[in-house]
Length: 440
Ligand SMILES: [Ca+2]
Ligand SMILES: [Ca+2]
Image 1: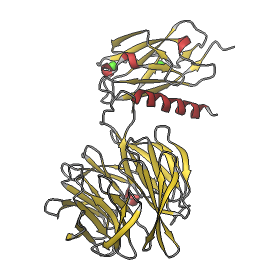
Image 2: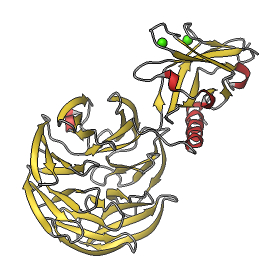
Image 3: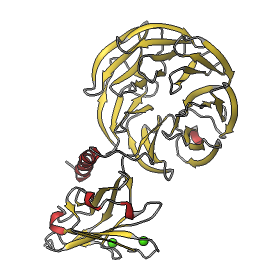
Image 4: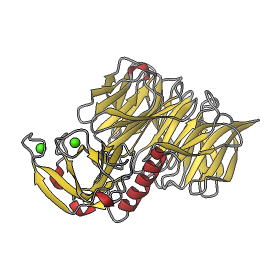
């Protein structure tokens, strides 16, 4: 077992333990983007719009959905470019945990709102099928048959009572009962080649992007009656703000259309300079993240509908999903002010570690009794602490002292970790390099 794996596993367990009894502050999000050519799942921190990690999950990495607790990401290696399998990624450790291999290759994935069922749509001889998996066991629990042809992207009603899946060849939306896992019927998609689907948070309205006829169709989601259609060039995907007031529609042309969901009219078009596919909106409604092909990941501020940032990528992006960041990375300094950070694992003394106030993080907000420091960030509790301006930049930092014998640090270790919780229940994590001495 590698050191890195041990560390991440222990960190994961430690944070799961910390999660019990603490509510997470929802200030920071992680934005997941896929790239089918590179076969990667990349993570961007919404607080800084910087790339924080990358994981190769396999060729054809396409659809990405997150579990409601943000602990797992499901990535489909779409049958068009890859194996059609689903990779299950543990988000805290950024590792592939397991793989679902559907009986026939997957073409889209949809997670039930409670996260308990994963639906994998597929093409089978003579039609389409949807495989239903129990996410606690990753076992196949049902196969829904009788679909017309290509089972395309889908969406659940927020209460989980219906699943709609588009069929881009027959131009229909198929209606599935997720309780009995049976196909109830279908209705015309309101245009040609339905692609992205979205439902308002109240569950009243279903939006269908018909890409080939450049139409956004608006349905009453309960009666499936077509209310109206809007003209949107090569409409691709739709995302709706958490307050239900606006729908953002991506397009193979170079703009995103903003639809007022009350009047169902296009309020604004935002120019991106390149075509766009996947889109997701942060849970607080503040930003829309758009996969804009080779133009990178575009960040739209939803208050004034302008592009406020671009995260560049070497390869074109395909899909976007957004989850709550499970911890915030903070800057720590072992042996403040000195470098390298020498630690003698046999010492009976204490090791000072500073948590620095910087980049919008205030070290005074750390709940000292929750902090642990050592090999995995789970070991030593502080025996003493103080607020001091350790780095002399004019603000107070937190300095903590740990008994070196309690840190679990071993000869040859090259880094140590600190994990804690703030008074507002945000989990923080920081690491710094070390050099072990006195080991001969
Ligand atoms: Ca230092
Ligand atoms: Ca300071």
